[in-house]
Image 1 (cartoon, rainbow, N blue to C red):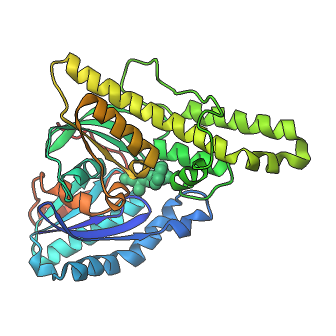
Image 2 (image 1 turned 180 degrees about the horizontal axis):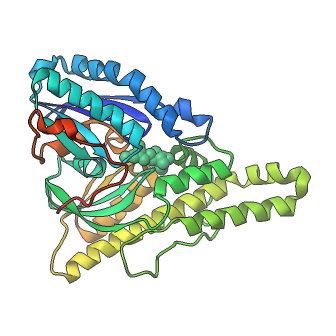
Length: 347
Ligand code: KG4
Ligand code: ZN
């Protein structure tokens, strides 16, 4: 039984897991506090975590029907993320562990997104290929064991979710942008605008979304100029569904193209990934899920889709990642630091 805490960005999360079973998974979203700014404000996030972390931990234990004494270890996200936000979780975890004499397990947030796949329902064990696409990260991971993953490719600029968030802002939609774009895209034509599927000719497994964002800026500007100063806002609103649908399709096309290439690369090297797992907030996207389903069917491999609450940031995935890692005993973990940047997770 592990109590896990996650505060790397703007969600204050705590969960209790028992092997692959999620006994509780409490997420207190701060989205409303940041919506007004169109993105996460680090200092606002830290202050909210300070207020929320203890009630969220209490709620996770209560929902699991357990007390602190019942858990074997405390797991916490130590990197990467907003440093002030991470520190709230790390300090809380250290205090709880030290006060109860439990070991502490330090978890990388990205391994957490990968590890969400080995939770119920229908747990997936390594080996598998994982696509993690969130507001802060976009990467392809080769997962061969529970202790870490091989980084096969990552974004050279914006993350996929970040691109969707920025696009939503450009189109006058709310935050977070991914679900807003998906909603707006439902009534639009994905072929209305020919946005570049970046990196499609690049043989590597890295991603890039900044060119796509620039293409959207130009498309919006062209519509505004054609309409003139009086009607520009209405003209963009009239094309919003088509712009959203075309942008979403270009993001998803790039993600799927790179997954396909990673499957090819493994086969060329005499290896075969028997399954694909999607993780991170963007894995909640229904077009991505659909296209990944088609790809896996064509390739004859298993597709592991997570329930939405395990895609976006949560602490159950941090608990899952902790099951493959070495617990740290008191007092060794007291000088453990949070870190803003990711460290390469050893494969
Ligand atoms: O994993 P996550 O909760 O936090 C980070 O670690 O970043 O991911 C949040 C990101 C945001 O950029 C949000 O716009 C995106 O996931 N997202 C979606 C959807 N739901 C959330 N993107 C596309 N479609 C969705 N349905
Ligand atoms: Zn995340």
